[in-house]
Length: 288
Image (tube, rainbow, N blue to C red):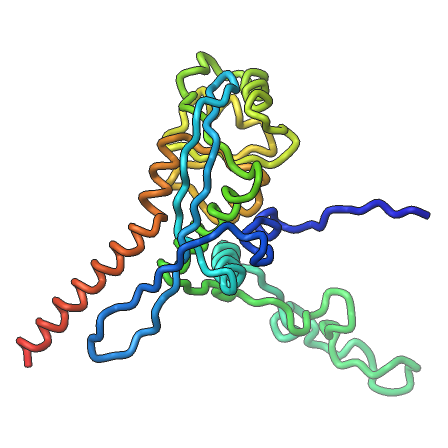
């Protein structure tokens, strides 16, 4: 009996080119960023610059040019761990932690012995609220708790940029579409589906649109498409990036990503931290 091969139920990010063997890798420039000596030893943070070329399509579906996405990414040997920590942080911090059960000491009733200890033929029982009977307490059940875990701000930014860069570097993983907010005169899902097909997108596949501003007619035209997610820089999150098969960006969104998650922004953060630490050390010396 021939067995058909089925795709694994995993996020598209883990099958991208970022985690292939070194022979299939796009060359990347590694930059070692280390703070100047300030009395304590700091481990250099290794960051890779991943350059991806993305096609630009017009609203009619014609290819009109190319653009570049140059984001910082985690090194190949730590990329999975960085993204995993970030996605666990996102999902776990969404948990409300309000699940609660009652133990046998908290269940109402059960104060009287149900029947005599001996001469009944039954097993001895001291309470009707024992965990062995329906309506009794719960053994080792959940109680309200705080599921929040902490992750460094830079590490979370690095995870997002690594996921976006991985999707962009994979073949057909991301495209750029010219601004189309003013092309929809009224909300109409049929017109949005036709536009997606012109851009080479399958409505049955999960797609994530990243735009600086989402026009009302565009949002209403796409809200009935269950596989579609429309995000802005404010709502950009790691889960939707990993859970999508295609990334659709606008030119303004590409500029935002390069400015926010590029290597230059990382170096700027390091310089700002160095200036802050230098000011704090100077203040401490003056106070001493």
